[in-house]
Figure 1 (tube, rainbow, N blue to C red):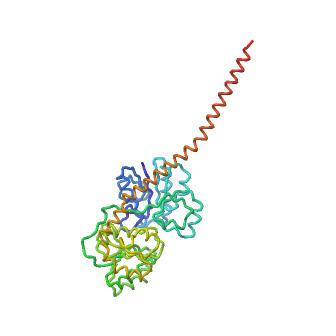
Figure 2 (figure 1 turned 90 degrees about the horizontal axis):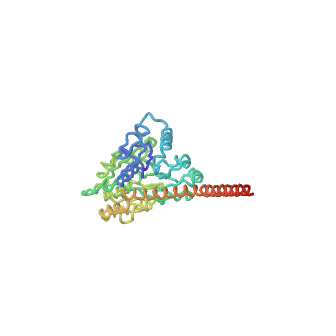
Figure 3 (figure 1 turned 30 degrees about the vertical axis):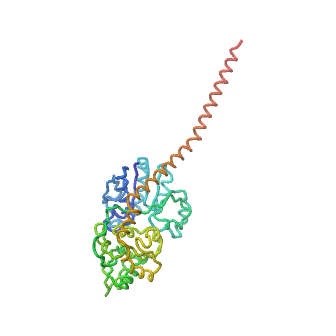
Length: 381
C-alpha cells in the first residue's frame, strides 16, 4: 500500500527531545517501510525519515519562535494532503479531529489515531457530529467517555525492539520522566522517593505555561533533598536514564491516554509504580512489569517490593506486547479493513446505476423491436 502519514508540525519526526505522538509516528512510519509499504510523511522539514517527506514548514513549530499561529500551518498541511489524496491508497492522520470535516467529503479511505485525552465536555458535540468518522484509540480507557464515536480498534503504542535495552548495573535511584505539570505528579514523586530513602532524578520538559508551577511548587521541594533535575532527554539518553533506575515512579492524576514512558521503562527492564488512572491497568501487568496502586500509601509499599521483580520478565513483557512491529501490523489490519469497506461502498453505489442502465437498455431494445414489427406490418399487402 501507499500510505500517507500526517503528523503534527509541533515537533520534528522524530522529535529531538520531548514529543510522544511524534515518536510514535516515526516508529510506525519506519516499521511500515520495513514491512514493504510505501510511505509519504507530511511533517516539518527538519524531520528525519526513510519515507518520502512532504515538508509543510521548514522547522518544528515548538522550536520556531517566528510562528505565533500554528493552526494556520496545520490548515495548509490539510489542504496539501487533500490535493494529493488520490495518490495514496490510505491516509492516516495524527491531528485529532481537524481532518474530520474535509476528508469525510473525499473518496480515499482514512483513519485518525486520537492521541490525547477525550473526557472534556466540548468533545461530546464533536463526536456526536462526526460519529461516522473512523478513529483508533491508543487504549481502551481513552474511549470510555465517547461511546458514540466510530471506534475501529485500540492499537497500543510500540517502540523499536532494540531502541532501549536493559543495563547490567546496580540500580541506584528512582526516575521520573515526562512533563512538569500537576497532573503528571512530580510533587508526589519527590515525596515518595524521599520516604523510600533513594535519590530521585527528574528528566522532564518544563512547558512555557508550566514555568511558574515549576518555580513555585517543584523547586522548593528539591531543596535539601536528594533530587536532581536533568531536563529533557532524547532517545539516546533514555536507556541510560531508565536502565539505571530502581523504578520509574508514575504518580499521575489524570486519565492518561497511554503513557509512553511506561513501555520505555519496560524495554529497559525497569519496573514502574503507577497510579490506577486512565490506561495504566492496561499497560502495567501488576506484579510482573510493575505495580498498579491507588495512592501514595500503596505506592510507598509497592516501591519496597520493586527489587523483588525480575527485570528480565519486565523486558519480556515489553517484547511480548509493545514492539513497533506489532503496532505496525495492527495498523495494517486497520488500513486493509477500511479500504475493503470503502471498496464495498463503491460497489453498492455503482450497482443501482448498473441496474438502471440495464433496464434502460432493455426498454430501448423493446422499443426498437416494436418499431420493427410496426414497419413489417406496414409493408404487408
